[in-house]
Length: 135
Image: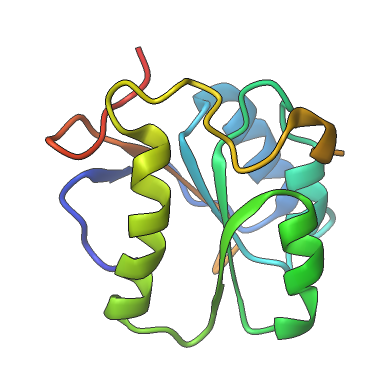
């Protein structure tokens, strides 16, 4: 992941079960998910997340044909590999307002009703002028 001063990578996981367990424990604000993970794929992990306080989801994959499914589970963005730093920053510009100071804690892109890795990479957005960590 390209370096960004307000992001803190809090873990990286190569399989869906480990990713889901870590996300439930760490409660990141932002989650980068690959589609192809075993035994749970990225879509399965997204469906298993807490619908009340879900992290912002970004899928990072080489497969464009999963995009519709990704947005059905409330993805903020869908990055096709390979991508450059400019495209990554565009994704972050979509994510940051959801976690800006004063934003509601559940500033998810869609309602909880919608909620049914690279590896899975959870991240927290550190408090800066643009974004803040959860309290």
